[in-house]
Length: 436
Ligand code: XLS
Ligand code: NI
Ligand code: NI
Image 1 (cartoon, protein in one colour):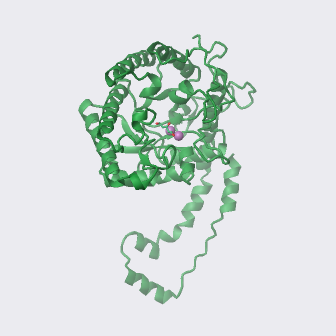
Image 2 (tube, rainbow, N blue to C red; image 1 turned 90 degrees about the vertical axis):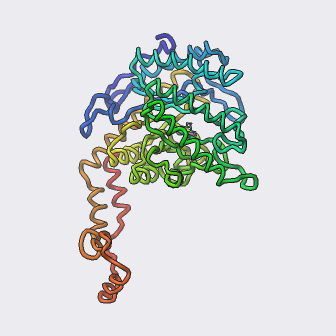
Image 3 (cartoon, rainbow, N blue to C red; image 1 turned 135 degrees about the vertical axis):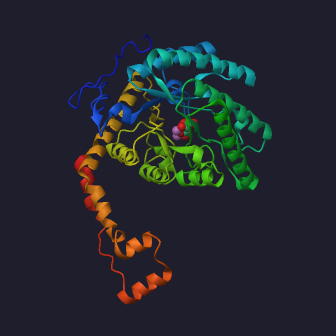
């Protein structure tokens, strides 16, 4: 345990603690609504930001100090990173982690060499998982960084690039299966377009569905039981991404007969880029039984891109956990911190402040959501608001007995409809505040 010598394992100290590296709300073994907080939240740490983020931005290079990382692309350096990563996971008491193939292992000069590099690192990841008990929430293939994917991966104009992407997915699925990954994620960073003048959209979408069907078939072939997830995002890096929001993803999955095999991995900052709230994306997916997992982060109201900040806002985490509880809790998913420290927060200890804060904000959100549900004031209000559907003409419409003619007859006799319920938004916002 040598990579973060100044950091001890983070402990729960309760809300009065002023120790910045202690949990005030996350008490892993405490039971809420019949499950421990650890089982509810299923926290996961991402390899790409936490182990590979340098703090670079379009205006300047990285700032992060990572004493264990020699900055090289060697397999040895990648092996050292694994050691540091698992020390961090353990000290944060995080039960899960997630990675892209290219975060953990360097690309070689051919696919064969690249696969061999990945296998070496996967063997080390497996040994570390076994000795620490940390598990893999999901694996994925990075099919957006390498220049070969400039036109997309599954949706590229070039058939050889599609073949490369397919091979990459195959290997990433094998590694994910071997490491016991509970999900496999597709995020289509370059699956979209910059201009429709040069794009055959129908052909590209057909190809995307082809790749997903190949993945479903291969999962059956190798016995991979994990859940497939698509991660919606409307733009960045492309101007338009095909997986733009939950509704677009679900429509795509349904149109191509993929809905039985996929759920969604929803990310807060992607929801807001799409012009939705996270609550909207979660409710929309949940009602279609497609709520799989979440990438927990937040954007900045004043910046228009995916800033991937750590979530600290109790309104956001309470709303998010309300939706998770509403749809029966995570099954294979979890709270995956797809978030990065700011460029100015360049020291290793900042990685701990960030995750402790994110975990605590979600723990607090879970507690708030459970209290809201226990008293049921908001649920009761919603139920009453729709009570005209519970009997009489409403029940007839819902049960399918009514027709345009029967409703015309009803209204001709009544003369007019008289909605007499206030939406009471302000009162409900005040009620929400009671629990914050
Ligand atoms: C980028 C995405 C990415 C996915 C995994 O915006 O959030 O990090 O989670 O490819
Ligand atoms: Ni993400
Ligand atoms: Ni993102």
